[in-house]
Length: 179
Image 1 (spheres, rainbow, N blue to C red):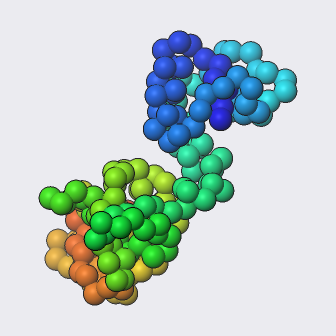
Image 2 (cartoon, helix red, strand yellow; image 1 turned 90 degrees about the horizontal axis):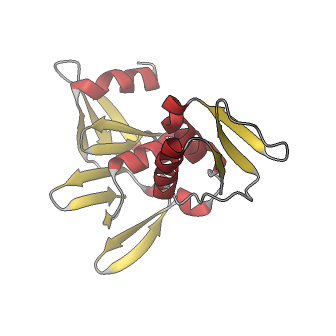
């Protein structure tokens, strides 16, 4: 829950983005997002931002303030007409494909609802990284990194799946792993 002190235009944008992450806007909150130029309330923790940087405030809240919420640390997947709650550490990779969004574990695959971008921003701190336009992997579940042609890589995962890192995402992988 946050309190917003900003222009009407920024308020609507922030409220919309916050609702995507189930963060309510309420004036009684102890945390205030304050657009530069607006008065700071004395009784609240305030995050001051420039209107143009409103998305950075969303990223800050999603990655930090709500990290302790348990449901953020799990995903719910559907397999064989049964739902399962899965810990991020059990997820080997997430893929967007013709069957929709799928989360792969060592023993099963689960249909999930959210987007790759959602899990990429939510779980980046947990070691998940985008490797191409349709796959997000858990770096802790990579068994081998195989150099490939054209500055690309193939990742061999815990479940023996081989996933190709596209040229566009290879640099980020190299920087992340310092290779």
